[in-house]
Image (cartoon, rainbow, N blue to C red; front, side):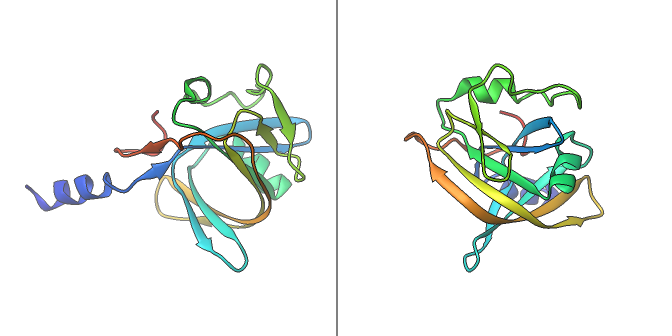
Length: 159
């Protein structure tokens, strides 16, 4: 096996959870599936998220200085299908889904397993097609018991 192929295959074995990242600002709401989420601090509780550049949710995160992560269950095909396609900037992808607002204002999907409501601490530009967002967890709740969706594979967005 070629060295690059070995690196690719090895990285694809790193497990990823399936989350719906949401944010809102001035009556605009958006969400996107993400699998690249990692805890980066326990005291205080902080997480990192890698997002492809140019997603409609990015300006909402930066302007509101907040986002939420809704953990998706392995059996929740509806949310994975609905958010597999990135919404247009002016579309509200939550119109047909039951939601409530986290303290930050970010939409929380009622059918999610849990959520983390975060204050944006930083976002980091890389010489790649992704940005890294760091969030301080301000609120969290367990909503529904289920088996978490876990994914192994070549990218962080395909369901």
